[in-house]
Length: 404
Ligand code: PMP
Image (cartoon, rainbow, N blue to C red; front, top):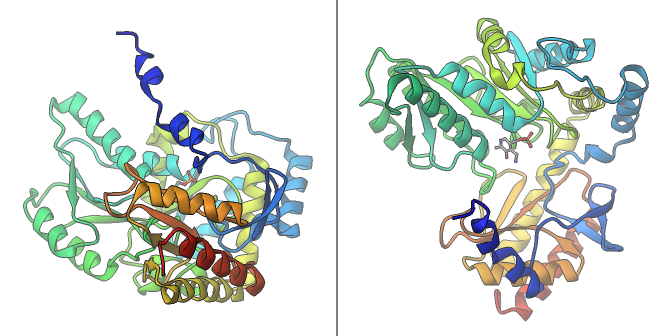
């Protein structure tokens, strides 16, 4: 059969488009942060991860412009060879200091960061112990580690998964692994779909008992929780016990790129051994400069975090009050669980038509019964935006019979 036959057979997206319910790839024509322009209409954005609203901040934009003037538009090489700028080194130093770790390494995306760490560290006879609900980039990193080890070993018993945020199950699976083998426990800090925070204190206890290292993906936690937005380890006061924290510049840092902080001996190893770093071009000058400017603002204006959390709490409470089933975790992500694909798509369309953009998460991206509208908030949402968003949720939910 022709390789492309599966593409011709794939009709789901076109069917959804024909029904007028397609929620993806809508082009944004202008973006001020809390308000965007799509199809010539002004829409309130409640689906972005621009948590501190810094993509539209004049200081961040100016830093990006200046970097283009000084260094040009791209680095045209990997960090390893011709792609290291003084800006990359500066951002690495600043992030290491921010997180209180010895060293830091930048990657070109957060997705690539997981692939730069996991398969590089977890080698033959070693194990990655991973939460079942971890982000796709961790899953991909795990599979790469397993694939590489299978090529060498002829078997792929590298990945061990435990039930979502279930530390009893984590202990039960890790206790069955060879005591002397190297082990990496990896988890999202704040889970991207539910907004739930990992049970790091228990994880740390288990890691110590069973001789494992910890990697936390703080993509949704930096700038959101912890002291001054320092993420999950800081939230629990477990900075020293958390071996590595990775993150992205595509959310709080208003840019594009990824990073990992940890011991300098580990960072140095990754720097010289990770194919995802060595064989891929470094983040562009404007991306790095924007992230640096965003970090400056995060350090100088921690009140933005309070505003972000206040906004998310207002929405969580308001939506729950109307009768929606919402995630109860105190983060910037507020999932509205609808539990049915067609209802999610109809709700999405109704909200969009009324001037509100949220994200539709349906199967296979979420388990059955968890089909949802994932909403997320920014420090720069004003009360008028949120009041309007709540009013739209009320009207659309009632008209579709999702709430009474
Ligand atoms: N980790 C998590 C938990 C994420 O949610 C994301 C992005 N959605 C990433 C990593 C990937 O980051 P990036 O967008 O920089 O590739």
